[in-house]
Image 1 (tube, rainbow, N blue to C red):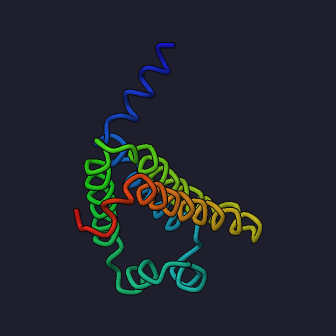
Image 2 (cartoon, one colour):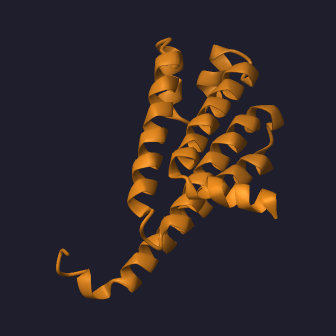
Length: 150
């Protein structure tokens, strides 16, 4: 019971949850740089055009820091706005799915399997489904305000 209380307390703290995607990005890009097998392999097989650009122009550290700040800022802002609403749980789920996608994406350099890559894309699709469900829930909960701008 005590562990459950600690976990729910952490989930309720949007400042803590906002750190998770930043750490997942750090893990993803660290695994990518460690296990890719070199700059040429990374440029050939990396999915993200931004990562390829950063590697090609030797600005990976700056790019990584910018991405970590970007993810933290967006997660913090979104969860802070969602905290007083019934959509906070959707926001937490979406942020955790995005973080899971990054962790799994980083591990894809170790696993190197097409099936595994499809599973990583499946987690990305799940994040989109959660986002659409949250949007639908918001629209259904407040239909009177939808056209008024209030």
